[in-house]
Image (tube, rainbow over all chains, first blue to last red; front, side):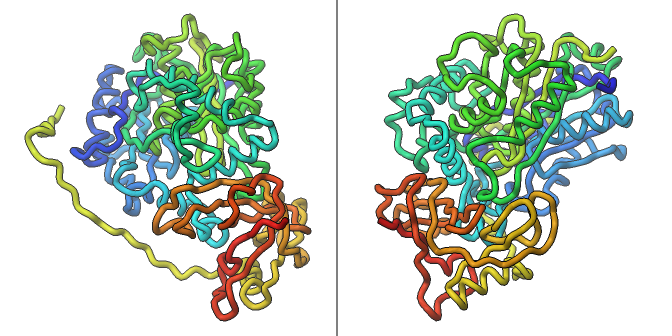
Length: 376
Length: 156
């Protein structure tokens, strides 16, 4: 394996995840978050040499919507700025690449999007192929339900198996002060909730939520001075599935398996089971089971031993569009840097972080973080 | 740090904006031919492409190796359901029915990939593995869209 540049997550801040922030615009939500992230890292805006945001024009209802937060992130004197029309965790990947290229030493990554201002179902329908998939009226809950049904038919997992996973996440989410859904629920209580889209119940899904996020990344030499306990990036890779929903095996996540294999090889990590923490970007329990399968993790919520899976409660307890993935990377950082409070996994040294974009786990990214530098 | 008026001091205001982007999209050579088959022939055509087999609905290039072209193959209007999502509360202005219905993926007989569509009736009997058949929009009402197939119905 080629020796790469050591890069670390050194700071993070987020706005409370709420159903609707009626008092602020998107940029106003992000502004104090950027300030807080820089303050937590002891940085001035002028210390940052690169900034990258993840947001969506369709979510925001305007073209080139990233431009509305340029000044919030700090655009003057002219800075290197970039943007991905994806969850902000992909912006973090772009920063990592930029740092590998030697073009950045300290950078910020921002996610924003006021999910409540539009209709996520209508907006995300437009993400689909226009003639065959969007035209039939598919929305993300329905594509997730299609995927869940395919997984349940292949694996034999039943409603109770989903409820047990969902209940485990709800119990974890109750301990996460930065989450949205913070009430524990038993499998029986969740199985009594109505169908959202069958086979997914309302109790298995996150409510509509919105937030703004800012992460600080820095290279070796800078990171140690900025943060007492940096979370070093040991490996990362992301892969995409075939485009058409009906072309791929929805019951599996081959792209997660491949991305994980590459990220683990880069990190020198034998498997996901060898990590202390695994944080998955699954927005419902069927996705979690598919991802566990793809990563060789146990299918049962009751399995003992092995890594702590989804200590944050996962995206099932908060799914603020454009930020959901970056929050997973933030959970990895919080767990390894002693910032996870009551839900902290004692002595955690390595974390596997996953996030997804698109309908039905269309694209998947896998990271490995560690408390020690990978290359020296 | 700049501070903003506290929520208690001003009532939150909002403006309703309907942002619309009307497009007229070319259906292209492959999608267009497929849709013309639905509209004019009540036939479902697939494209046999490199390393994917018969793709229905067809796309212009192989998703696996990006090779173009291939042989057009007519497939059956019957097939097997590979995924089911049962919608109990349809979303107005988005979903194709105002009554409970199901989205399905259907692998038509003779096809190697599945088509996304809807089942409107007898949802209690619908499951992965069910056999279904296409029902068609009436003559004169088919407009060259995927909804020229009105729905799929369960075959006993």
